[in-house]
Length: 371
Figure 1 (cartoon, one colour):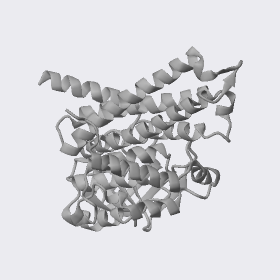
Figure 2 (figure 1 turned 90 degrees about the vertical axis):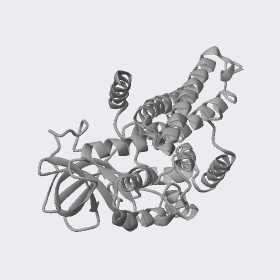
Figure 3 (figure 1 turned 30 degrees about the horizontal axis):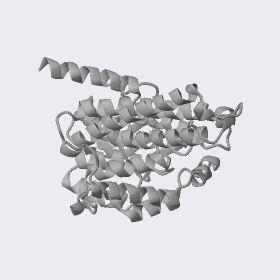
Figure 4 (figure 1 turned 90 degrees about the horizontal axis):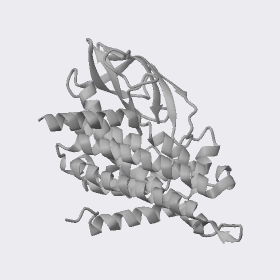
């Protein structure tokens, strides 16, 4: 049985890599990093939209390419490799997936074509501070179709046009579609470890909100959205981790210490071998997740959790060891190692920390084994 991408998907992946190598070198990533007023690369965003990537998994009837999630996974891996400074994940992995999963026909027709065309930026606003939101801790409320509350941090919240917000209505948690450009929305940019991905505090006061899905389905739908996004983010993490391994390997084959290439020392060999093993483990789990996502298999919660855990571990380890392999120069601003370390930490939190996913994986395995 062949678990790899098909030839067509490999071709798409190769074309995506060539496109990003030409349009998203690390010098462009640094432009966003160095400019506090620049939240993302607008030119790259438009160029990616022109490639049709935002609509890769969106059905043709809603303006997308209708390719499927496997093709989107291939694209995600290359975006991660390039540490692309654009709100692709928030818009495609979160907003688009939320609308495709739970949106009405009218909501799909209103939002999905705009996502596919790159006309809007999306966000998912659930957190209200440290810790995952729960039924007892959730403070944001909806009354009479109006949302009031505070959400932070919201990835890409300072630049998003549309958000899916978790809030209570009549004591029941639900998801709501909110126009962030309307009256009653206040935004405050937050400082994070990775300024190439925007984060903000959003304050809502009597803002019109349209329910997504059924009443009281908020946490159940949110977990399903996170499962889908976790698989796609795992491919970004795999792409970034692979690039870190390549950077470390290449440096080890050109840097001399005590008259020898550092790559000839056992300590460096073991470091690179450990990076490779973690990367391959992450890749195998990401492929399992991609299969479950593309086929809507009942194993998706388990596959997504495994992909999320392995992806976070591999990217963080590879980014950290890439810096260590470079030695003292690896800690400097001029070397690109920190770009990947920053992104590894950002992606490690965007849909929940690995600890929560480990607990979810354990509970899902216990439930399956008890059945």
